[in-house]
Amino acid sequence: MLTFVVGKDGGDDGKRAVAASPSVDASSSGVSQSPTVEDTTVPSPSASAPPSGYELHDDTEGFRIAVPEGWSRNSVASQHGIAVVNYRSPDREHRLQIYQVSEASPAASFRLYLSDQVPKPPGFEKLDLQTLDDGRFTGSRLEYIADSLNGEPDIGTWHVYDERFVAADGNIYAIAAYGPDSDGSGAELANLTTALDWFCPPYTTCDADAGID
Image (tube, rainbow, N blue to C red):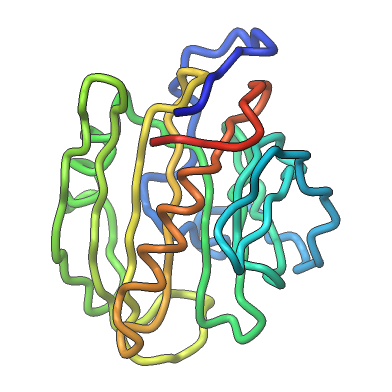
């Protein structure tokens, strides 16, 4: 398990956020899309390392995360909280997305997203929704498929895992993993769980060799 020490009191109530949708659409949300650039952050020093094929990044938004090697980064400006950050594979068929959530709890966030108030991508089909609360960790994970995602390549059916959780700084974040359903869901689930294992929120000091359980 990771030991967290809050390093900055941001005066935040933990409810700053971006849109409830797990895939933020810059063209429809009124936020600006920044150019895609190679991530230049330096991996955090650590006594151990993420699994083979992954690397640690200290993101410019202040959080630490593990992503597959060779992926590029871009971000979408948000009116609240950190920017919406995307890491993508070179072929753009796989993506990790990180952002803050506005609702009071992960469960409330998914209730809103699955309601009629929030538009869904074409062909949206919910496969599973798990509550992951265990006394130490508070979070929920949604699994779904969709025929297409706005701004993403046409790869056929997309398979998505979207986890929303309370981090050590008291804020609620989402990490979502996207990829082609034709490849099976194993890669997306591995990308998600590895990112979560090594996630350290902004203004928080974490042990270098572990992350969220």
